[in-house]
Image (cartoon, rainbow, N blue to C red; front, side):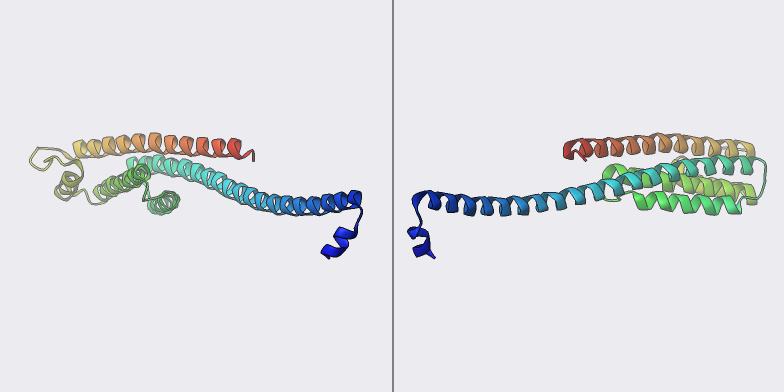
Length: 196
């Protein structure tokens, strides 16, 4: 093969070297393009999944807080709440599964979800049983204040629980809203950076 190459005229040698080098560079370019294409397809896929996940998180969050409002109304009116409680529990877990318990900020969100559920359950239990002593013992654990030694009436306890529910709900709404905004901004930056 080298003999054939050496037997060529100089201009044909340069042409042959040009064809060979063009073929090599074309092949390397093809491999590089394929690699970049695979990487972009992966990034687009991941970004799409993140966008879909954030959309679902927004919907679940909105439904969750809507159900809390509905539950508070039903409790105030002493109406049946079973279906609402089940839906609230379902939405809470959907939100929890979208959060990363290893992330410190998201761990706080999970704790707030759990705290809200605890206080709601105390309120539901109190509305059903009207057991002031049992309710104050549970509240003492959450509020870390000594309620049972104070002379609270049933209506005062109800107001205190309602206040705590509203407080946790307000903080959780703000925290989840901020979390969603932060995640959206991350997705936007990724999209711009990779020109997806």
